[in-house]
Length: 120
Image 1 (cartoon, rainbow, N blue to C red):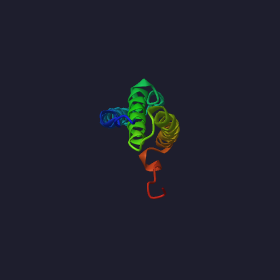
Image 2 (image 1 turned 180 degrees about the horizontal axis):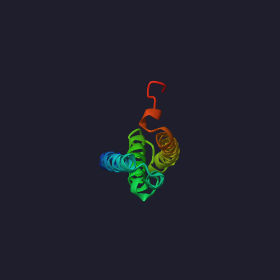
Image 3 (image 1 turned 90 degrees about the vertical axis):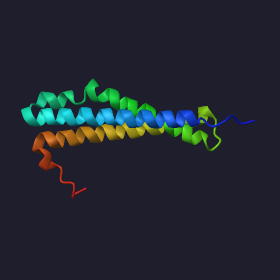
Image 4 (image 1 turned 180 degrees about the vertical axis):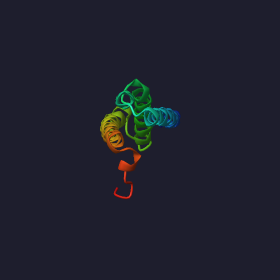
């Protein structure tokens, strides 16, 4: 009656998100270090370019597949699982991307000291 849950997709989505996250982290660190050395606003404008967008998209796709596969473990069909997983992933991704933009603006205006982590 029910098909087997997609355990392989669950693992593949997790691995895709983790590896894309590592690429995103590395690209972000390199870009911020370049900006810190040169203090150019052009470099921070490039941070939102394809160098970060492609790994971030990889994270979102991996999370979406992982989330939908996890929902399928509870007996939902693939269509229902992706119908729930895609909006959750898109909304979360947009919120995180906008927050990253706000943090980069804070860094550009006041340097790393502008991020008072105790205030959060």
